[in-house]
Amino acid sequence: MARPRKALVRRQATPPVTPAFLDDLAAAAELAAARHAPRTRVAYTKDLERFATWRQERGRAHEPVGPADVAAYLQACLKAGHRAASITRYRAALGSRYPGAAKAAEVAAVLAGIRRTAGTAPRRRAAFTTEQLRDAAAAFAREGTVRAVRDRAMLLVAVAAGGLRRSELVALRVGDVRRAARGLLLSIRRAKTDQEAAGQEREIALGTTPRTCPVAALDAWLARHPEPDNPGAAIFRAVDRHGNVRGPLDARAIHALARRVATALGLDTSEYGAHSLRASYATLAYRSGLPEVEVMRHGGWRSAQVMRRYVREAERWSVNFTRAVGL
Image (cartoon, rainbow, N blue to C red; front, top):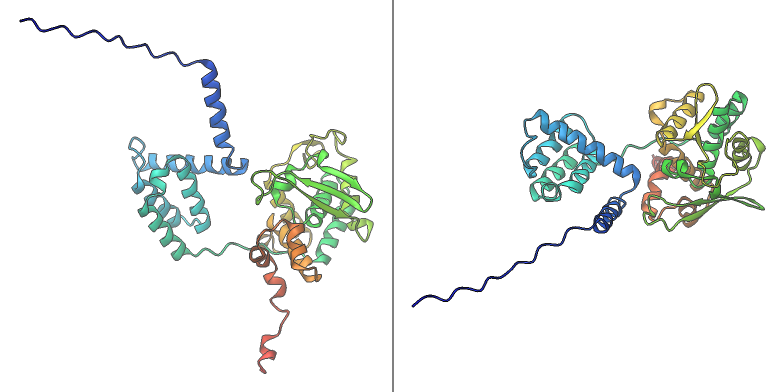
């Protein structure tokens, strides 16, 4: 007896992927990348490139990335003299592309060993005193060049606005400044502790003297600005050696500013950097007797513990413990 034939089942062809779907997919990828701040994305890209170079040199370029690769790379970075904080960031960068390898238990164990061996104390930048800020402002005023006018404005605005971080300072736009009877209101669109860009306003009151007044200093710079009426124009711009005002500043320019201030004051430049501006605000505000909650509000700190790290040096000699114990 002949077996009955099986009925033929026709498979439906898979519909082609539409251009609209590809556009949606690309937009979703852009949103996923936007979970990190622009500076973080740049740093991660460089970290991943260094990792790829290291794997190439070790003959691992054609092998899948596994926990052993990440662990070996982190110890190589430690051996090369990298700080624990930097190595921690490298692991985070690798985790953005190789989460299974970078977050493995053996990698976590190696990182814990690095932190215990190398220590995790962050490098502290020195703060400028009130007298030093006044002297620096006076030096820039005497110099009178376009760059000096800009530098004086950046220095005084950064400190008076609560110790702006370098990313906040270079991100300021002309439209972020609003005039008020007692000074200026500065809109900070995004901060380190405000990754979802809720925004905040910082008040900058008029100074005690014209030479150190941040409002006057900013007005003097805007008078040299090529687009003072363009709300979307960056406030602080690059200035070439001929005094021509160019495009927006890179965040590294704030580090260079702090070094120039230290040089003008005859200080050890290795002790100063971009974070010195934030440290200066915290130290001086705390010394003035402002309530801690006000220091934190104006500086955008959410944690009192973090803010107190900035003022530790200011208070180090406020009490004579030797005398207190009778010695």
